Length: 388
Ligand SMILES: [Zn+2]
Ligand SMILES: [Zn+2]
Image 1 (cartoon, rainbow, N blue to C red):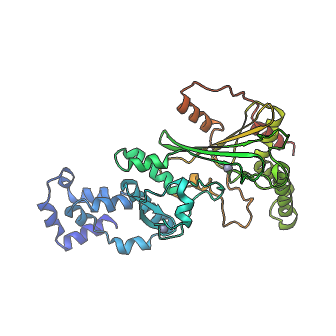
Image 2 (cartoon, rainbow, N blue to C red; image 1 turned 90 degrees about the vertical axis):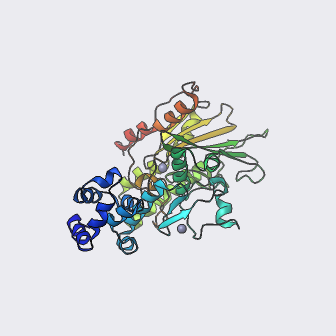
Image 3 (cartoon, rainbow, N blue to C red; image 1 turned 180 degrees about the vertical axis):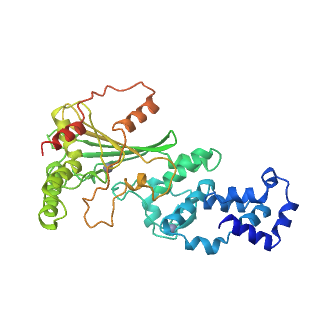
């Protein structure tokens, strides 16, 4: 509300009198018109919080929250709740219900499937704000990230829950491996570095038998969902690449929404993981580094010198505290509303390799590993574009 209208209302209702009687706190010693001028520039959630500090300020702000809030756009309503949740340790913003939900200290990434499908569910909505690509039992949700960042910032509440949110998760599959008799190991390790939520994931596929087996067999195969844009689905390296190529060909030749040139660029972008693994096979024992073009995710791949073990690591930067509507979060989430899964979204601007370096600086403080840096595949990719 414009402050002159508010002033008129205050004067009409005699609130100036009330105001003069309550000038004890420093802020209340300001002339009323100056204070109104200041509060007019506050974000809505800040006005809400200010109006709940004392009767005098409630009278000054005089917002009718129940009426005004539903009239806002969805984005502004979410922004309001995000602003409130920032200061409330035990609340998080639900995108589906467009309101705050209370904290549930049993709800951690490693237990999300139990929370979602099991009897321990406490959230009264079927919200899922994960990345939508997870095949493991570990599923980090947007509100896990936000709660972890907030509790870490506050430092004095729900610290046990914070520790549970930040716990490393590991899982080994042997008997039920997707690629028997290979062993699949998965680990997810979250960390808060410089107030950013960074997640490192690792997949290890091992052949512990005496026979020579392909680590990424064409039949059955394993699923490696590094990010929505770098994923190996069923069918191994060759099958995954062929499937993506034929899907893009269908789009180019039948849907008429992409030129052959754009199709070939897209194919390169969505097969960076396949490229990285193939390059790693050419240089066993060496790390191959790469980065996603559409979300802030660094990648490293190594095939052991005896070619019996493949290690794939990913470092994701989920950013600072924010809204589930922020582009920085949405870039990490598979867009299920798009009919075409190959919609990759806009390019994301970040320094490739910086998330991995930030992680290793934080973890080892420069003790380092013997990673041999090969030429970035990304550089090759850029070079390749001009040849297409
Ligand atoms: Zn909800
Ligand atoms: Zn990505």
